[in-house]
Image 1 (cartoon, rainbow, N blue to C red):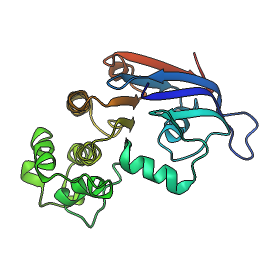
Image 2 (spheres, helix red, strand yellow):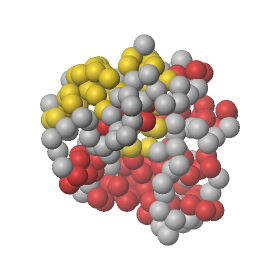
Image 3 (cartoon, rainbow, N blue to C red):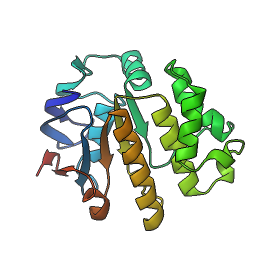
Image 4 (cartoon, helix red, strand yellow):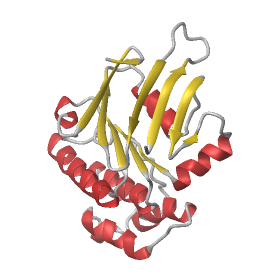
Length: 216
């Protein structure tokens, strides 16, 4: 089992109710699923717990059998470098680095930089002619493709995509999602796609829906 969540609960300080309540599910390597739910249902919180960006109050969040809950900040950061890749809606590219350097950044941190793989990803994502440019010189769709290439260049076992097409028009979103799914499938990694789009969620083989911190 690539990912296991068991009775995971998360409450933020000052909140009257838990954001997540006794959430449990699992997925194997190669699985792809859409995570849906209204704003405030706990989608981003769940993704942050899986990605080691936050820690659960109770329960188990395990990747490849390693429970993230007791890890400190350094341990969770190591997990993100080596095992989990996160694609953010806001891209989070480094403005002072070229496209080529942005793509290589995460892989270098993980000690897995492969110039050939980076170039191949650039070509698959239509970025070959933009490698010398800076993020501000790219369209939103191109920046999202750079963010995808950066994540996949590090060869993560699990890819977390938080509304990765939320800033894109419908046609571009469809194209970006298709390329993302194809590339993830080729590596055998797992993919969790957080989306508000019913249309995009329907394209994923599996779907989980959160409502008020629990799976509906």
